[in-house]
Amino acid sequence: MIEGISIYDVLTLTTILFFIGVYGFLTRKNLISILISVEMILNASVVNFVIINKYLYPDILQGVIFSIFIIAVAAAETALAVAIIINLYRQISSVEVKDTEVMKY
Amino acid sequence: MERILFYLLALNMISFAIAAVSTRKMLRSVIYLLFVLVGVAGIFFLIDYNFLAAIQLTVYAGGIIVLIIFSVLLVHHIELKLEMAKPKRQIATVIACLLGIGLFLTTIYSYHFNVVENNLTTTTSDIGSKLLSYGEGGFILPFEVISVLLLAAMIGAIIIAKGKKLNPKTHT
Image (cartoon, rainbow over all chains, first blue to last red; front, side, top):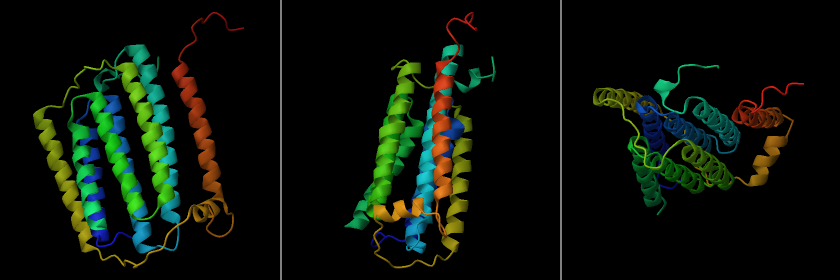
């Protein structure tokens, strides 16, 4: 654990990061910006898993392993999302949310 | 010392996160996200999870950021300004997010955590043997499922990004 830092400080930091991500998710109008906000939300939750593991149950490793899984799923999700965005740009020449009306051609 | 380091990291992460969701230039937003992710890796280093910090740096900063930069450069002009939401909607979202932060923080601060004072260090071999053990509390099954998921995502990404066939007549 970090000397002189209580668990409340770290949880406050991750809460603020999470809600900054939510703000970006709600206000942005661009698919790639929304992807960036989702990455921020996922990262805040990863830090939460790790911090709670370290401060409350230091002799088991569940939190670390779950955060590794979260990172793997986030990587897969980003690869798929980028593929979808590029394909969408080829078909409708735009990545704005308001132009994305049709799911299947 | 660690206290000062943590507060510096926290300040950096919050300011760069706000910059990442409010700037109007696409590429800068991605770079600000990179700083936030490096800050998260710094927190992992501070609590002695070196392996996790290395994963964070390689997968996020090395893989995901590069992927997003590629997609930005493929679909945008560099000087394109992003359109923002209406001011009224922005203010409403800020108020909703502040309410959410208040709710979360009151819940967190009213709960008493049983913090265990410790200075244990976790080695990479601990994580590896836990990840591959099939005894009590082992994680071999989720590990295999994740590997299949990564394979499926890779194939799916290739098929989606390949798009339509250039010459649709050749279906023999």
